[in-house]
Image (cartoon, rainbow, N blue to C red; front, side):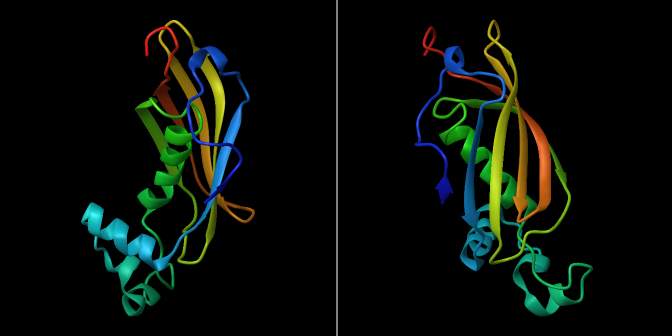
Amino acid sequence: MLDNMPRGTICIEDLEIGMVRYLRKEITDRDIEMFAEVSTDHNPVHLDDDYARETVFEGRIAHGMLTAGLISAVIGEQLPGHGTIYLGQSLKFLAPVRPGDMVYAEVKVTAIDHNRRRVTLETHCAVGDTVVLKGEALVLAPSRKFD
């Protein structure tokens, strides 16, 4: 994976509106197979070339939640990072991700509630110029005062 910041924690006291972190990851056949195994989602549109060719996608696609998991990786590793707790996530899937695609996952701080330690994050994933997923996350951020 390629990203713009080292792993770790940004405490809520140090967060600012507009902060952005991201990663890039190529989605491989192995990623899709491992996600199917862990999630128990063995839908043939993800795993069977012959089946998938006959669908509206005209070929295999990655699980949507595999792509969404890259957002989780940015949140849990970079922004805010270690110690962050997910409270909610909205997702809208806009286009398929295929084996071999390089996915760019980005998280941006849009609101901070210091009293409740809540941070709202704009989230999206793209393949090239195509946004494949967008949404918003609400997280409980780590704090130097409490953690």
